[in-house]
Length: 588
Image (tube, rainbow, N blue to C red; front, side, top):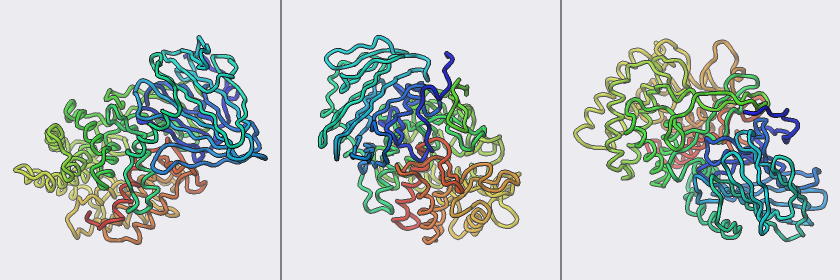
């Protein structure tokens, strides 16, 4: 890639992660800052190079906000949608910007809708559009205006912009203007970026109506659940992260957002993890036979039938292998380093097969297990039978060891399919579960009666809470409550939960609290008929978000800040499942 100038020459100043809002259409996603600056967008697809990379110190952004910097900001999502409304109050006006990625979406073409409205007083607005494909490597060229529509091309992409006929061209194919919207009126802008020249009319009214119709049918009613608004928001985020074309769901919209300042744990999450896909499918299935369940089953089934026990932990959303990790020549989000690709794409992770079996059991319970998925179920069982004794990378993608969580997940999955998919094989599945549990108990149950992290590590492991919540143990087994108590005593701080201990380091020093684990604790407490603890963990964990209601992977308890990529799909999935479970009985 070409050398790029220092970040300060072309980027807006970064914000703490809690301040950013997310727009998604299933095929790609954008992050928007408090001043109306769109700082992250990959095009045309999730794992494509970014065209707006200001978030990680690169060039390219789309600014649409008040000209007066003396303002305070806020915003909200229209309930059950990813239509976001940003708000600013200046010295003499109130301004709103309604924005969304238009849906239904085309994998090769995105349409971004923004509408500035002067709520009170005249809105004096600044617009700056600087599209830079290839993480800034390619400028847009051939910029021209025809019939009020700007068009340009670069880096294999083409753009059109409607609603800014008065803009003035700048360097590198950018556009900039300042305009006034009279009090009570609005101005629409429509940006299209795709792999081919667009021909459709960029009609904002038609595009907004289609987007509103889509969201009205995409997110089910959650009014009967605990925290109904947050549950619907979680569902909307999962929908916005899931491709309508393939059914694949990305783990997060971003790459390289640091989990700790100056640390090495900066990863690219713009891919579909099989495990995360199962978490989302299980959460949706707990609520009902909604389309995201079918999407999860379909995506997992295709990969499993193609690869068997060579199943990769992660794929692109299109189902292709994930590339090797490499660095970008960008400054990075403060405290982070920039990477694309992910090494996890070549690991073996036994727990993924256990989660797949649980997903298939949930689909069978709702009569959503088709012929291909039934064949894939047998493939998954065979993979477990051949590999459960094998050391593997486990949930946290670490060194190959005999991880307890992976074995208990396999047990939970086998028990679930034996219960829901009746037939001659069910007894064999139960027998295999008994065999795995018996050997895992011999190797991994500590003398104190709680489950250890691994065969060679008696320390606590929060991930063990999930197979306990899924019913891997027989009723009344004392090791379940003992394990939950051991984890809470050793891994919790101020009502938040960490994954595991990092040697002798205090909690919170090596990494933040892991929000996924807080919701796992909710599910385990509910399963063990401890509703007070379940609700306490649920309420505390769901508080760890910023004003837009997005959860990252980790939470810095002391600084009350988000850490890592966002929005993190598996956290939103577990929130949704916890909201459903807390509204029913422990065995549901």
